[in-house]
Length: 223
Image (cartoon, rainbow, N blue to C red; front, side, top):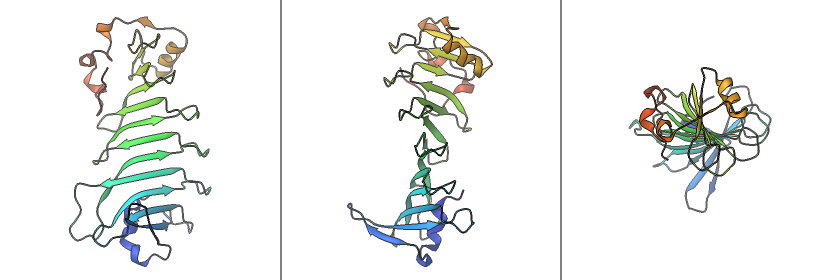
């Protein structure tokens, strides 16, 4: 999928450009484009239509061409723009996606200017509540997952690759844990009471210094 910054190179010749004034006074333009070159427009980009400030700010993509947008992208400034380019360099800062194409956004991603994913949130059961939060390392790998099963805004299951800590009484502190090299087994433990009591001084959540460096996320946790 092409990032729509490239369309700004052709803004002046695009027949489907539509300029409209927004309430905050910036002249904005729409550009419809065919990102996979099959003759059908599948994306629309919104950009600041100012000769001194050309920049893409928002995009909508219909990745499966069912005429329903399933990927929304917000953009921010990059740290550098080549001096010979009229449009400002931008980077993706936030995405919202309908991954199963059912008309509901189920995945949110927050990105850093250097292309790293800071975290993502997932609504796995489609109820509109994003109960699962994934934290990434600098290799764009998920190293920690937090799940809020009772929707109180506080995670009660925290997963690493081979370990899970669970707050069984929902007081904000993990009190049981399990370890296994199988992700399926870790999930089973949380469902079938296969966990062991966890002293606070042994909790990775409450004592981040105990967490192996291989699980270091870009965003650390605070409890």
